[in-house]
Image 1: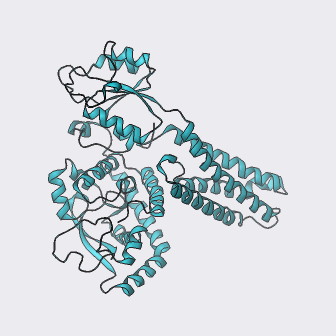
Image 2: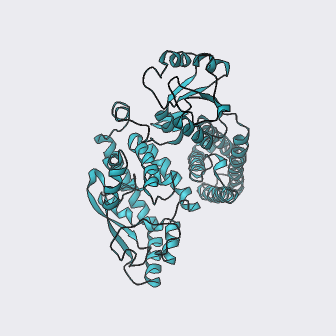
Image 3: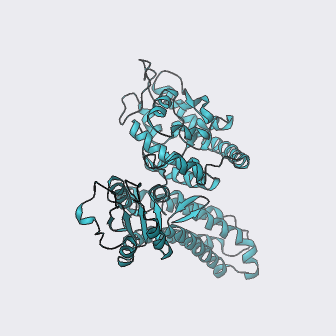
Length: 460
């Protein structure tokens, strides 16, 4: 894993992005140099188009999810992502090379060649994404522990990185109960250091259920680290591998004395400027969609077009969030707040469509302009549920230290939640965002939001 601006990426993802950027620059520059009539004018006159298009390819591939692992996709979703990337890439190429000045050369031939190159680059990324996922060898991981915590680490590791090889579970000296099969447990006739060397281990994840009374062999773990083996505690493992902070393993000391959770003036000011600029642009671009949605809602069912509801924002202050109405006006006629559920009968036909496409969230852009929300942040929750969840889930109020968002890390990493257990899972992603949030991570989330919208992931 590589840490970029406090956010973790797989090393192979970073290599893919860097290689694609270099390849696209070289390929598009080659198109210009081969077909331009005047070589001395080629670079100054077309250099901006080449750089812009290479950057556009990165944005398109990222937003289409082509840098994610292929195992996460169904066949239909894979086809949709590839088709989307191809359409956007070809259209962008046509538009950018349409700006070449007259007299540059055979502009039409250059444009067609560039479009073919762009299509080839995107198809290459799709094909190599599958091939690399199937052929790449993963890390060899030893899990130190054999209790419930170790079992959970093993299960999440297999789901998060199927190519990683778990060489076995090394039981802790004071663990009374084993939760992993005996066949997966390593014998303790050798020390932890000797076992790691013998098995060629790349990483050790410390997942001990019992850590008191000499359970942690610090000297052996240090020897492993000095021998080149990466050693992680369970909290850091979940943070770097899954982008979440597990509330069932974290402690207040780790949160207080660790890095992150920086809420300085400069960071807040930059984020506010970013929110203002982006929300204004998005409001202008989405105005036709919002107008059409308002008409459709009014024609289908009686009642207001917009739905305003009290939510909890930064520093636990409440505000009125604005959304397009997607349910009947009597959705909560008994006065008791309810979570939305799958196939909720209260959702109208138009409401089902705008929920699936996330169009119902667009009016929240005006909340961003007002300063009640940010473009990216934890989902704003209703006071009724906040009170309940604060009493049942540790550290729940930490998410209210920053402004809630129209989209967020939890929204793109986890499906819609309708239970306390779902809220705890989403909180673990929210804690990661609060700890590591930056403008860079906001861009990552916005790119992933595009994929979520296109696939309808988690909509209710």
